Amino acid sequence: MPELPEVETIRRGLERVLIGQTIRQIKIRETRLRQPVKISKLKKWVIGQQVAALQRRAKYLLCELQNRAHLVIHLGMSGRLLYCEKTRPLHKHDHVRFVFNNGHELRFCDPRRFGLVDAVAPGELQHYTHFQNLGPEPLSPELTAAYLERRAQGLLRPIKNFLMDAAVVVGVGNIYASESLFRAGINPRKPSALLRRQEWKKLAQAVRKTLALSISAGGTTLNDFYNSDGEMGYFQQHLMVYDRAGEPCHKCASKIKRIVQAGRSSFYCPRCQKLGNIKR
DNA sequence: CGGGCGGCCTGGAGGC
DNA sequence: TGCCTCCAGGCCGCCC
Image 1 (cartoon, rainbow, N blue to C red):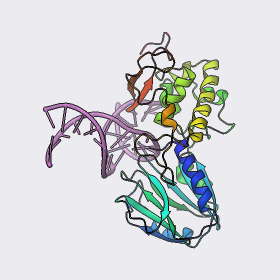
Image 2 (cartoon, rainbow, N blue to C red; image 1 turned 60 degrees about the horizontal axis):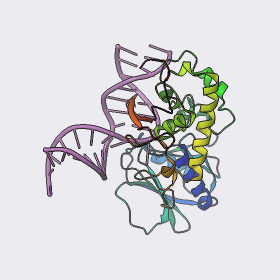
Image 3 (tube, rainbow, N blue to C red; image 1 turned 180 degrees about the vertical axis):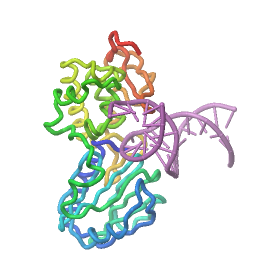
Image 4 (cartoon, chains in turn purple, green, orange; image 1 turned 135 degrees about the vertical axis):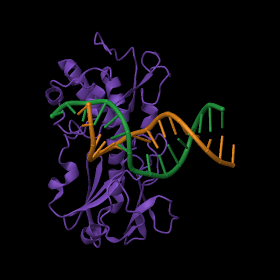
């Protein structure tokens, strides 16, 4: 479900309410997530600690604690975080709860259980397994046209799949890959190595712009994204192609197309995003 | 060895 | 009402 803008929206919301709070208790009802929840590790590093900062790396939410350990949360496809009073009735899939001193708690709810809750010992974050093969942050100065062009050298895979590869650049999921390519006027099927210098420039700019706009809109709510206060995002009102198959392009009124690439839906405008003379 | 694909899960939508 | 199929915002390991 959540891509970078949604995770960033949650991070900002939690930052306002969690800094300085002490995690008094962790309640676990289900340990079978993407990887089994390590209860003893969580208790060892997290219980009794004050929240020092909320950070984000790729789609991972990081809660830095006063002892310099980190609580790591990934929302997978269907994960949600809700900050609420601890008396509020539980949802069926509220798997992990972090109870604070102020009568509130943070609930990790994840019906499909593709998400992750983990603790990382002080100073160990840079060695964390899941961070080892991640590319740069898309909103950092590292994401340049030159960087993308260099990484794409010799790669025949479609640009859409290249963009969604976290080893190339993190945070760009299925929605924002399609949206960024539309903004750049590039066909999702175009072989990565065949993009021109000017296209790389447009694409780097389009990725940054699309993500930044979505963050300012509070993310995209298609069915079930809500921020930590339970409010929806509004970027779905600005989607140009995602989930719009058969509808008219907002720029040229051509019918938006849906294709499947690497098992995922891609959406594009056949007129605004021409392939040129490359076949299939 | 790049990269496509299936699998991990539940639930909602739509067809019959 | 039910049962079936398909689909879903992520990620990883298996294979060709």
